[in-house]
Image: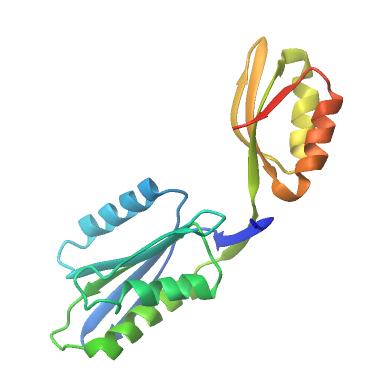
Length: 200
């Protein structure tokens, strides 16, 4: 069952961890989609072209089923999994952590690598602000312009998120309704009668 709320981070944060000359730069970002994650990864690869590894883990979606890990050439299981473990230890979603490694000349071995990636991921999460966000149910509302004020008042009162608002003679508004207030909002909108409501 999908919960009413989820935890994510408010804005990007960074941290740095060093071990025997190797430098691990950890970046955490709030992301909504795989496309957004790919842009972040491409940007960091441009910013750090001389780094030997760009390892990452992300988890997406309020059901938390969409995740991926990458060791990017490090021994299997030494980077991506420990990073994901840190995301999961804080029960976060819609988050990616990318750790950029500059090799310092000394091999760290498997335990050393696991520790380095886990620690740098943990440090960047400590630097981030964790926030609770409502899980939204998405609805499309269609109505005539004279109902605009009534509809917008309900949307504001009930903390709905507006994704799209096309106001002409006939209005189309796409909103996210907090899951825990769904029946209350639908009830109020139905009371307005001439509003066509459907999920999207």
